[in-house]
Length: 377
Image (cartoon, rainbow, N blue to C red):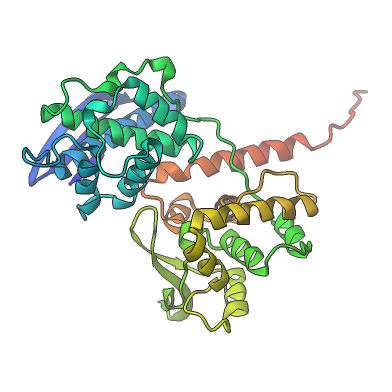
């Protein structure tokens, strides 16, 4: 299964965007009636059109994922949301981690672990679930989950389990909106140095180490806290041996190879004699005992205190380390495509958010330049 945005050059020189959809051995094309001028004057407008095409692509992918995996069996489980989600979770061609997360949130929201009928879901249920989600996860992640839920409900209508999709009855003004102006917190190099030199007596040393390690590797918390020594491998780069991490991303489930920077290697060397199969053994042990989210909350609390002690007035969470890595890489000359690969992004459009961060930094730098008083003779 695959959905790809393709371009067709028209006679007048403009570009028409269309979807190349391959599903169950069949290929079809969907022309989106979206045309790009590809001129400097229309660059901003073309960018918006590409984002619209990307949005349609994601919607089609979600619809196919559900259609391909969920069987509304007539004998058992026909009207059970949880069984439908289990079909998706058990389908290895799917992004299983997302469906596991959605199911977990639905169970927590409803308090039901065995059966939730499709018929019990109405617009009020969806609005309530939406409100619940934004207290647990980011705005944009919640939007992704709601989009997948919508696809599941649409397929239930197609299979005549539901007469109407309740999502269609949620008023537009009540629907969650994409957070377009989300501010990404990152650290400058001198701020990382400030942190490294600042003592924080009650903060476990391993909390400091894993945060700085991720500032120079870009790993997510979900991948870093369970990092194992057997994930560290040697690779040959043009005849030169280098260290890298080979791991399967928790979020995307893709296998990733990540070359290690000198600073990241230095932290690994500090941890080398911990006599554990895990690099950050204390954190991993806590995560196994209390769940990783509970430990992450503790880490974030310590990071906030640490930043304040260092005189850094920023809302510090662990994810700032990943934003820091991307921003540093761009600042020191890495290309957008390279950074996209290092971060494990599936779509380079996700990585372009960091170019705006750099542009803002440039604007702020220019704004600090003094103005000369030049008098004409």
